[in-house]
Length: 144
Image (cartoon, rainbow, N blue to C red):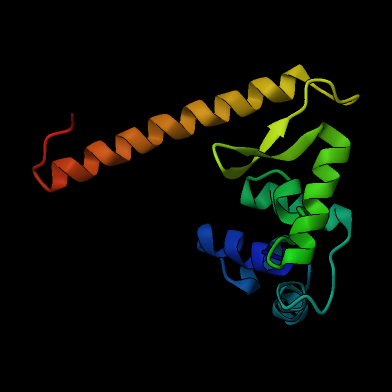
């Protein structure tokens, strides 16, 4: 998802119009909708201070607005290359499936990142179990 789509997504998530966002960002009533529309349609890219202001309004990290565009394979591949170079996350095979692995011998190996990834995995696993239980409760099924 490109930055314009992210801006629109976060704006809609908090139920804000383009006019309201533009006004909160300091644009005049006349130009608020136009400027936010330009950002969302990617005709204009906001400067970092504007991105920071949007992130504050949306209550998200500014990086969530500016992360690389991975909606196409070229963008995704470049992101994977950057992850390998920066963090040692490498593409590998496990049980016949492609997966990402953090290389502990990589010069940029970071134990803190490994802990964060483990935490993410644990939370995701718990959420999947909870979703499964809720689904079974709705369908009156028993969870084994």
